[in-house]
Amino acid sequence: MTRLGRLFAPLGVALATPLAAVQAGQPEPWGTGFQPSASTTMEQISAFNDLLLIVISAVVVFVLGLLIYVMWRFSEARNPIPSKTSHNTLLEVLWTGIPVIILVVIAVPSFKLLYYADRVEDAEVTIKAIGRQWYWSYEYPDHGDFTFDAYMVADEDLQEGQPRLLATDNVVVLPVDTNIRILVTASDVLHNFAMPSMGIKLDGVPGRVNETWVRITREGSYYGQCSELCGTGHSYMPIEIKAVSREAFDEWVEQAKVEFARVDEPAAPSAPAAVQLADADKPANE
Image (cartoon, rainbow, N blue to C red; front, side, top):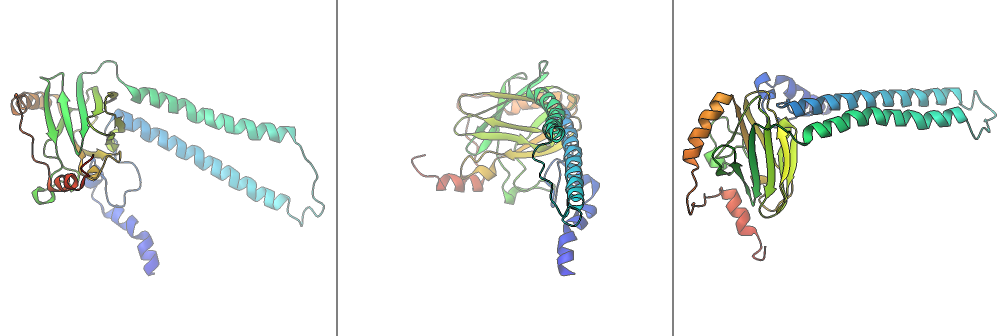
């Protein structure tokens, strides 16, 4: 009974989780699937995943049924003298043609999804995410070209509702129902800008700018992390995006232009204790 309780404990936790928590754009305890979709791209990724589940389930059922039939039909009791057939043209055509058809069924929507998620032609907002050791910098070139850094909120500074290791001191604010171009690069080593609920996962490469896009479908706070092993402070550079209405976004932009106004020699913000510790452990020749 104890083993059964441990086995079904995750199911009980999932059923007891409030709906509001399930809809949050962040990882949840005992989560076994995708986070709820928050963008048109993620909606298509989820639909493609459902298609693959149907295809692979059909393949498994077919192969299992075929194996059971072969075990029954060609058992020793029913076939005391085994067949010496070495070739069957029809079977050879079928076991070659059917997998090809299955791959085509998978490939067509896969290529369509890759093309859809690649880039957007008519972007209404552009932001640039720059990966650094170990925090993110953001630029809004279309809205005053202001820049700010986003550090992880230390444990002792967390406020009510802020998730540990995911909240940041400065939040990326983006409008919903808007085509947003996202440019990703890095200033030192490889980083990766990943936002699971929006279907975004793109490398930041020093000296190169990669591009993707997103169209957020609902307001809320969404969390991601750097998904490239970038050093000792890798686990301390989260991403927090707050999706708001277009009107609220325009108001925030006007405030951000003042708050993050460029100066000749900006003072470097202090990093969280965890990042400072990671810097202290870094070899001197790096």
